[in-house]
Image 1 (cartoon, rainbow, N blue to C red):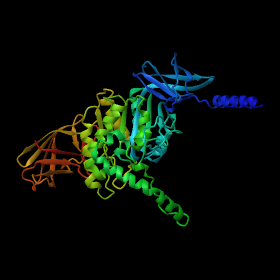
Image 2: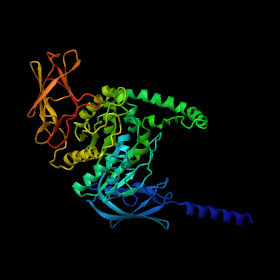
Image 3: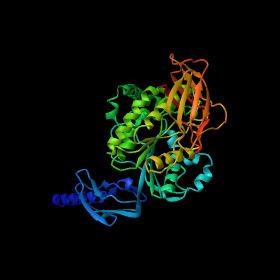
Image 4: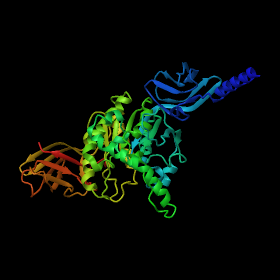
Length: 487
């Protein structure tokens, strides 16, 4: 009887293991996915420990044995753009199928709330959503997740762009992808990995952050908020019963250094991409003196982790805004950091100073933001000979009391939208105090002077939260705010 019971128990365990044995592809390889062209195609997933898994893809077949944790990965040769294709995984009588897969270019759309801002919240949203039907533009939204250590997978699914799928997707990302797809005719995949209110250090690996002494302030703040959160949450749950307007305490994860990197970027590193578009910096403006190193370090680390030293990284410069205390002083500093970093190899900048809203940190006119990012990508990444940046200084010299700025128009010519004296220029002398200055445009030269400064040593333009934006080119692209020392 004991022997019989033992046999039944063993049989039950074997049956249970068989029933619970899993076979799955990583969500990045789900139906409707886009895989990066012109690079080896690695496909991975999970199964039972030690199981043999047969993978079929694009008329090729490979077998692999899962490791003791049930993880497996195979690699197929690189392919040119095309499709649709299927991936089939088979193991122990089970099979998993992903179909309608395209080979093209994949871009990661990341940052804080202005990148998160969905299509349903923008100007003319109904019409924009109504015409958003493009089977060669595919969208993947990474579920928000902060983690203490890098995780190996994200939660999400691929969806072709349609009026039924774009409403909650990043508007900046969508307009970027729409323009890119229309211009290149390639299948385009967009991976949206965003969280509002985040800092650059939330998106940076702990290994890199620990090498930066400026990080200590942020680790300490996170530890304090994490320790205080349970009591704040308990107090809220009591008060909200009698006062529904009681403000809900913010979970500390948004202040966790490295948290969103671990949960939402690290699991993408094995998935090759064409590049990154980045819209962030508002939350870092309050300690902008830290931002230069944080952003530099983050970009370098992402390229290292993706094993792509030349990976394009395109930055949205902060839009015009003046609706909060400190913005007029802090935003220009962040914009200048973004401008300088964007001038480095394989980086780019979309200037949006002219499409902001004075009293709204989330401007609703997102189409030009995405389109300018796409113009930058088309010029810098895809080799198109098109205008993609506004007028920008190539030399700054002093002539007596005047400052002479020589411009590259970025197109055919530079234009003063108001047709008169340019606004938004300031000069400073040896005391480094800036004074409003008069400025006039003649061809590609701007002459700037101030009666308050007899010997200028620096000049700046559009140095305000919500500045005038008179300086543009004939392609309609605005000049970036800038600050330059005089040669």
